[in-house]
Amino acid sequence: MIDVDISNSRNSRPASVHLKFPVSSKKEARAKILVGAENLSKCDLRIHWPEELGAVAEHFEKIPRGEHFWKELNLFARRLKQLDEDGRKRLNGAWAIHRPVSMSRAIGLTYHLDEIVMAEDIYTAEDFGRFMVEEELVDVPEDAESCLDFEKIGAEYMADNACAIVNGIYYEDLNPEIKVIYEGLAFSSDTGSEPSSAEPKVIASVFLQNQVLENGDLKRLDKTLELPAKRADVEEAMWELRMRHNTENGSMWIKWKEPFSSLVLVSDEYQNPSNLRALNRITQRLGNLTPDEHTHFSLFTSMYMSDWSMEDSE
Image (cartoon, rainbow, N blue to C red; front, side, top):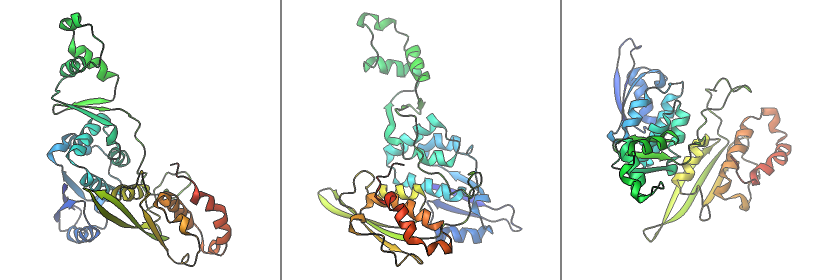
């Protein structure tokens, strides 16, 4: 979906490699060896975008590249791969409207595309003004239509709304408030000023399964996820299994890791994917326990079981 040229000018023997994103961890490890870099986010990355993502290509270079840019770019590429042609068109328009200045915002846009509407064969504000009149989106007396200033009608509307015209397509965001899906890595201090670079300890593995009707046939979808996970990864798993809004036909099996493997925390009523978000929050809290606190886990369980049964409100 995205072609990336990676080079490391800091190496005593400068080298480069070409990869197609999204990229596997195996290919990432090989790229590190080839260019002689431990963190590929610090390398020179030249990104080649698909033709239909011209607005993304134009503004993407303005997004700051932090310590974890490589993983964030890979997540963004996975989201792109899941979009059909219509979805990529909407993303291009959404990008032109919002011009995100962070990877968090960019990734959030890929979950926002249902709010984007399009109208084709519109190249100017005048074209859009004419479209509004023809589609009766503004009240105009019939005898006054020949005297209308279509450019003014279109320009005034566009000035008051979240919209853009890109390559002959008019885009408008019906709900400009973009929900935060990806928030980056957990902060290492209460102030939230420094992101933690440590990989979170795996508390549990969950196997998710869903059955969906596709072309008249019942199809089984499944996925394994290690918790705690980033919020974006949890939402992506629910999206892939088509369970973000309906978990009626879904199932979830949980395998706890040491030192939590002996816990009798989950009963049949909790084996529903609708609880995945709550389970992820619980594993985040478990991961913050010290070894001494493990011995007091029964008390901890009684404190947080209410979160497990709560409807996710985030």
